Image (cartoon, rainbow, N blue to C red; front, side, top):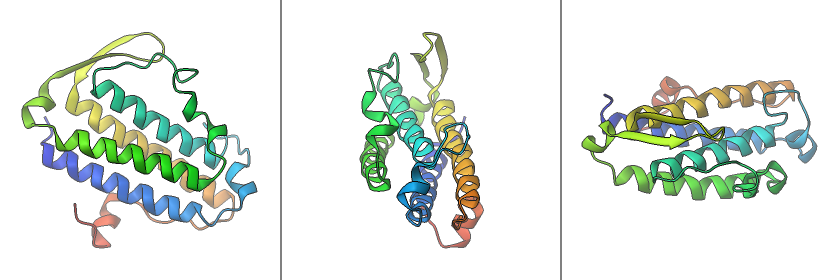
Length: 173
């Protein structure tokens, strides 16, 4: 099992990397932000909206709820509801605060407990809580890599968001 201190550090890093990447995205024009690029989620905006929604879904699961679908149950996370980077940032900062509050209330014992939830396809899954917490950070990292690629394809500067770079830059949890 992974210690709570490490999970907390990974989430601190995750939000540090998120904020650096959002700052890099601020250099995009509105057209670039919305441009369909043929990625997993077709634009920078759509990829960021997916990350906001995924974090919310997992927080609900950790709290004992299993959202059934993104639409219409979570229609507020539709990419169209995020016309600007500021809209993404505002919603994500709010969600991040909720995640931090949740993490602050955890104990080492809670990390080992099973978490059972129903995914968006109606399938029931059970994992230790700690494993799902790590999954979310890993998921965010995966899509940050996609954002890095999209930024480069759009001719914008992509910033370093690696874990070790964070520490080299003075990041401390």
